Length: 316
Image (cartoon, rainbow, N blue to C red; front, side):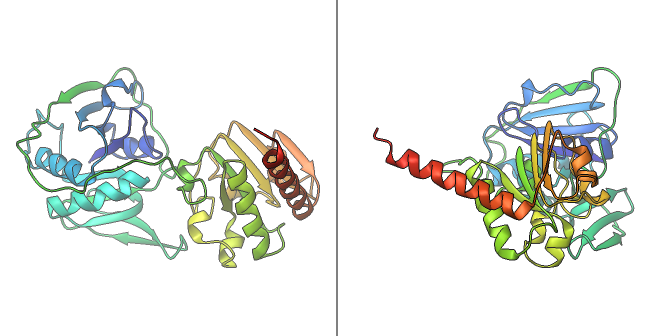
């Protein structure tokens, strides 16, 4: 298997290390700024394909041409199984690449081999084993496989692409906007505000989402909340939802069940609000606030509203 990782301006997406590890250290970095990325101890072979700014259809055309070349000088080893991280660009690129290669696509896989693929379905409540009969393209969920260590510097090769040799049509990219914290993928969020069973209503989660947006964070929830349908499943944090790795995690009324905490990654800072000072989430926290999560959230919301009103009244 070979991992294909989409890169924007030298920034690797969530799930990169998982995809590389699943493919035994063989990775193709495609996009912009790939020459500036150092994968020492993180990969065995690295192929750099500088295709510039993101244009999914164009990227797919060039990658398909490289994969179909069947030339070990261009791409190392077998390319029958192509694995991308299940990040936003990976989810866009994978189906376009599968179409170009005339291969089936297995999206949201949790484990991969040449003859079997495990995929999560029904909001993570079911795990299906599929049996591919040939070459395929797949996306691998971040945080489930985990990283692997490959000692020393990887073998690095650079592929120069002839942009005129592979023609086709693509949508015109007018502008690339920064992510909206209210809708961005949880796995990409640097700040997350999470809510658990300690919050008392669906309306409280609407308040939590507004509070998160006000402080530049993305809202998440525990499984018990998504099972109540108060929050969509794509906001569920944990091993049965979205595996995250924020710099800051602020939780309200989250007790800290193992399937939730195992999906948190390694945040630089954790702040928790809970009435139970002995629950696992409070023990994990850098700052543990023993208080009712509903009252605390309401008070913080009022303070932010007052600050906004005072700012608006201040003359320029």
